[in-house]
Each structure stands twice: as C-alpha cells, then as structure tokens.
Image (cartoon, rainbow, N blue to C red; front, side, top):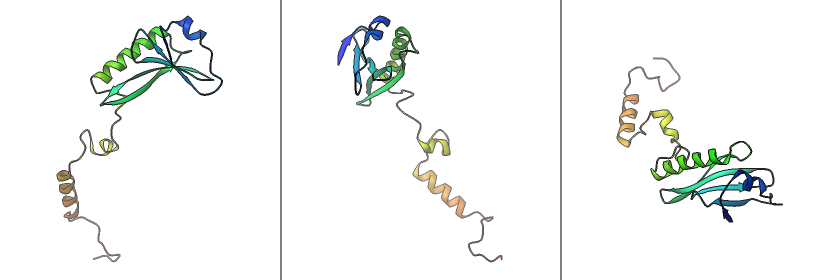
Length: 129
C-alpha cells in the first residue's frame, strides 16, 4: 500500500496489477484512497463508525476528477464523524412496515390484542354461522 498526493497525472500513471487489487492512500486527506484493479480505478473513503472500519466507494476515477472525489470524501468523512452516515446505516426493514420508529414489545402486544378482539374477524371454521 503506497501513499502519495493524488493528482490527475499521478492517478493516470498508476499501472494496473496483473491480478487482484491494490490500495493507494492520499497523503493530503486521511481516509481517502484509490483502489486499482485490472479493469478499473475507484476512489474510496475509509473511516471509523461505531468503532468499526467502514469503506465507502465514491466513484470511478475515469468519471470523477480527483478534486471532486476529495470533496465528496470530506463530506462522507464528516458524516462518519457525526456517527450518522447515510451509506453506512441503512434503515431496518421494520421501518418500512411500521413507520419511522420500530415497534416496541408493548406496542406489538396491543396491536395483537386489538386484532384478536375484532368482532369482524373471519370465522375459524370452514362453515358459516
């Protein structure tokens, strides 16, 4: 893993590896890097979120210039520092079903009790009353 200041010239001059991927780090912005594979070069940012290392892909080096990728990296690092990054903490599946707040045990018990006590509930047997 090498470290140097990323510029368009230095990024373009990197030779792709024959197999696997090689990570390069920027000396100007800590956590900002470039992952070079046989087919592509991708900017990434790496930081700590809740005592775990998270790596977020920013974009391909042939699409995004170095300065734009560095700005995006600073934005993502600031989100990681505030412990509320948009890409590192997806919403739980229960949030889609129950709204913004996940259900509590007491709330689920009330929900189950009201469903069982409905008078318009379907009959349990196959015959009609």
